[in-house]
Length: 469
Image (cartoon, rainbow, N blue to C red; front, side, top):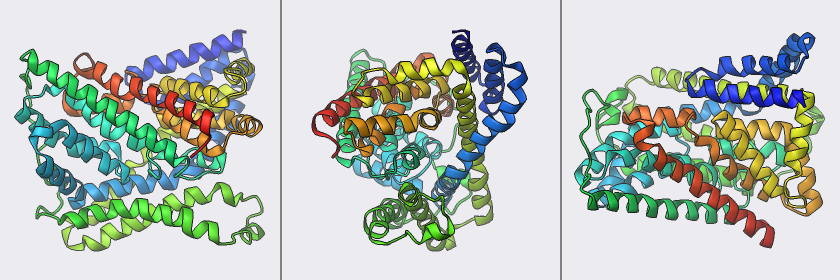
């Protein structure tokens, strides 16, 4: 019992200090050490760190480093080539300030679904959102929630084929691919998009009726309206077809290899060279890696005359992937240490015992709870699947539930409580918009927590009744 209390204390400390802004790179090993000390296993402290924590961290890097690296590189190429701003400006011209909220949501959604990092999207879209909201006299405090809808919700967790790391994490555990349960994913995306869009428009209408308006804000020194200008990329307008092509390639090439090439090629010969390789559990990751590689190469070649400093772009993209992956890998190492403690067995049995006979509910609770604790959907997913993935797969097989449905529920559930106030993405978004939690967080929570959880409940119900589709 005391070992369980040690885990809870460690988790609470992790949440508290993460909210205060301390790096997970420091917190994860320190809080893991605290849990070990409070459990009374002092002699095991160093072996657990070197053999358990670091092994889990290294294992995660081996699995997912290429996706983090290529995703960050692709996002930087999109930003510095001017493609991201071209797409955002095109949507702005088509829809205009009369549909300011929809314009911002679609611009963010198109970029994130195409593989651009949500942080890159937030920086690129905020100046456009600021001008649109000011022209439409919509409160600035609604900008973070609007960007969050397009970046942190349905394009990150629900739409089939999204190259977001959250959608890739379950692949090696469940033997699935990025298009798992596409029908249910689309339904969840529609729920999130339509309900949140209604909510934001309702908030804007009420603010207008109350005479609130955009509000008075000190915006001196904020990022330029032209995000390309700040990157040093070429400033001449890029054709829209050229800007959108890399996003189409990410999804198209991914689908081609997932459904066209890998299923029709006999790869069993690979086991002669790599006897421990489970080919079926890796092809989904391989498809995403190839898609991102092709899209990066396309951007480099087709934009040769647009690069101000290609070497700098490539270097910043590569180094930009380091912090996200090591943060998440450190959280995985923390989870592995927690899972090795005696008290975790009580927690494990409690979680697995939720809704006996329907592991979807238990899985959703585990994913969203750990995502909330870590303040990261990818971190929560990774910890939960590293410690409980095999258990959930076995329970799903016993209950006749497809791995594809388990995959989609896990990903969407992880996109729920991950945006609690201590979430790094929320803190970054608010800092970009120069707003506070007090001004904007309640709307962010409605957009990224309450309504996504409604979507989770809906697809669990549909999946239980009709199976995966």
